[in-house]
Each structure stands twice: as C-alpha cells, then as structure tokens.
Length: 475
Ligand code: NAD
Image (tube, rainbow, N blue to C red):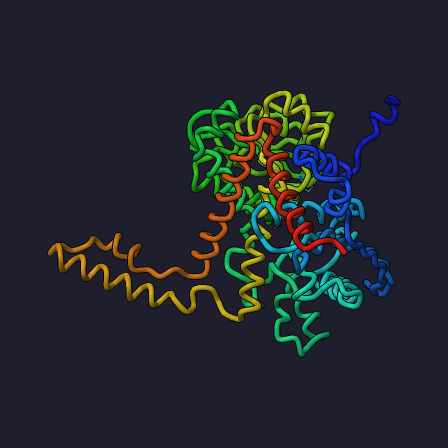
C-alpha cells in the first residue's frame, strides 16, 4: 500500500465504519444487507441567519438520520465550534447500534450546530436554538413519532425546553408535543434522573464489570472497585456524574481529571464535587486547592492507573499516544474517543476497552423512559407508589403479629416505601446496562472469532438490526 495512503488519518465516520466492518465479517453478513445497515439514510444541512447584537450572523447545522428500522430515530444535538457532516453521520450511526445493544426500540440519529456557545448570551442562544428548531420542523426532522433529539455536548435541559416550546407553538394541536425532544427539565415534561443518566449508566457498567470475576481476570486485574485509581477526561455532564458516583458510592480514587485548559492531579484522590464547584465558578481548574494544576492536559491520558475514562470528545487516543497508555481498562464514556488504529494497538497491549456504543447508552435509555412518560402523560410510580406503601405496611404488621417482635425503624422505611419515579428510572437503567453487559460478555467469551468487547457489542447490534431488515424485507 502507498505509504501516504496508509498514513492518511481516517475520519470519525470511517473509524466507526471500520469497527462495524470487523463485526460484519464475524457475522458473514451479505454485502447488500451490510450496505443497507451501514448507510446513513438521510442528512439535512441548514444555513440560517440570526440577528445578533444588530448584525446578521449565519449559522450552519446538520441532522443525520442513520436508520429508520425503528421509529422514532433518536440522538442528541451538539453545539460545538468544531462539528461537521462526517462527525454527525458517525454519531448517528453509533446511535443506531447503541439502541440495538440496549434494546431501546429507536433508530439512530444525531444533530450538530456549528457554534461556540460560550460566545453568546442566554437570550442569543435561545434565539438561535428556536431558529434551528424551526428549520428542523419545516424539513420534517423533528416530530414526537419520527425524529426526537436529546442533549449532547454543549446542550442541556435549557436548550431542550426551548426546542419543545418552539415545536408546541408550531403544532399547538399536537397533544404529544412534549415527546418531540427528550432531556427536558422535569417541570417541562422531563423525567427525574435524565440529567445524570449517561454518567449513572457509566457507573452501572463499571460496577457490573467488577461484579464479574471472569471479566476482571481477563482484563489482568483483581479485586473490586474500592480504591481503584482512575483518570477521567472531561468534567462536563457525563464525566462529572460518572466520576462523582464512582468516587462517592464505589470508593474509586480519581488521581487525575483532565479538561480543555489543563489537568489536576492528586495521588490521594480528587474531590469531584469540589472540583466541579471550582469549575462552575472560575471556568478553569487553575487555582483548585485540592490538587496540583498544570497546563499539559493531554499527558494525563498516559498516567499509570487502573481505569481511564475519556468523557470529553472523539479521537483522543490515537496512533500517536496509544502506545503510551498505561491504563488496564478504558471505559469509553465519550463517543469515539479511541480511533480504529489506536484500538488495534491497545488490543495488542492487552488493554481492555469497554466501548462507547454500549458504555454511554444510559442517556438514550432514560430518554426512552422520558418519551414513554410523555406519550402516556403520567409520571412513573404515580399509580402504584401509595399502593406499595399500604402493602408494605400490611406485611410488616403481619410479621410483627406473627413473631411478636417489633421491626426496627430503619428496616421499616425500606420495606414500606413505594418506588417513586427516580427509583424506577434508576432500576430500569441498571437493569438495561447489566443485561447488555452480560450479553456482550457472553458473546465475547463464547465466540473464538471475537477478541474484544467492541466487536462483541457490534455483533449483537448488527445481528438484531439485520434480523429486523430481513424479517420485514427491503422493498
Ligand atoms: P459537555 O459539553 O457537558 O462536557 C464536555 C466536557 O469536555 C467539558 O467539560 C469540556 O470542557 C471538556 N472538553 C472539551 N474539549 C476538551 C478537550 N480538548 N480536552 C479535554 N476536555 C475537553 O458534554 P457531555 O454531554 O458530557 O458529552 C461528553 C461526551 O459524551 C461526548 O462525546 C458526547 O457525545 C458523549 N455523550 C453524551 C451524552 C449525554 O447524555 N450528554 C450521551 C451519550 C454520549
């Protein structure tokens, strides 16, 4: 092969395609079906003007719909100064496979707006978001039953509320308007637990991995999660929640946190909530008293640690630095943080990678719950919570009458309490993440042709998607 060609960097989309093709080979999928599964179904590019501070500014946005085999097609919208069609298509494809892996009955989609949100005021961002929403609606790329976005990098509850409200004004007769977007604030039709969902999902993945002794052994590790040393990149929505829960609830020690302007290190462990508070106040890690700050952020990825959690953006571990990675386990909380070529190097070094296409599915799982809640127009737990409480009290009374003993107060609360919405969301999320892990692990363990978690995850996804294509037929 020509050296130039060999050294040419693969785009994000090409990286995803290579990884998927590896799984297609295992399954021996015929080329026609493979092409149908892999192609991006439709892609919309819009350019629209918005008057900002008296001047007209042009904005460019994309929405890619990768698959329609299940509806609606689902995926976040990111606001970033670097975003393009290739990236949006890659992210949409990942959504298709992700939904299949965790049994969420959606197709894959993704959107992006080329913007640096930090340069605009809240009101300006609202104006821009509403205008972008208008474009998506007019072109048929936003609807409760067909195309449903969610938050991603640079967007959150606030933007989702503006999107839902704009849709409502355009389609006031649509009783299901809140279901046109997920990740909304609770008071505007959102669901409890959605903001933390992706990070919480990352925690559930890591917990399940360490519950599985066989998996831990295969990764060349031992013991449980307590006191494992971790490095995380990105203290945004996903990174913050994952690190907070893992450190506060599982005893994981974060020895390094990396963000765009530098890293903080502390071999005794960093207090994640304190660091986040510092970040919110100062928009930098500089000056944080709970660790040592330095500007060289990238080298943090190469620190000696047990767990490395990239939770910022794509292409962070590449052919350039893969050889220097010392972590035993990489948990891909971000989308596409490890490139295809880097993945091969890490595999040779026996580094275990839990792939993005599974690890960060918590967001879409809870979005699925939110969408169902919006269509059913009722909060989860509203019908049964008090009923469960009455049943719990009856059990306790029966127990106390039969034994002649009094149940201690702290047990009483656990037994009597009915499940509220947050309990149910967390339980559904945990169940989905555990089931998927066990399916991926079993596939990896039992099929000699599969050597890594990523291929196992894609094999499961492609098997399900191809079955849906072949059962229904392609016309
Ligand atoms: P976010 O915007 O809330 O946070 C991103 C963080 O990364 C910020 O702290 C930012 O400062 C940091 N960052 C940006 N550039 C960086 C750089 N060059 N080096 C180090 N840090 C950098 O975004 P998020 O929602 O947390 O998303 C993070 C990743 O997770 C993305 O890949 C996204 O696609 C993926 N993801 C997010 C969700 C979700 O529900 N939000 C769901 C699935 C996947």
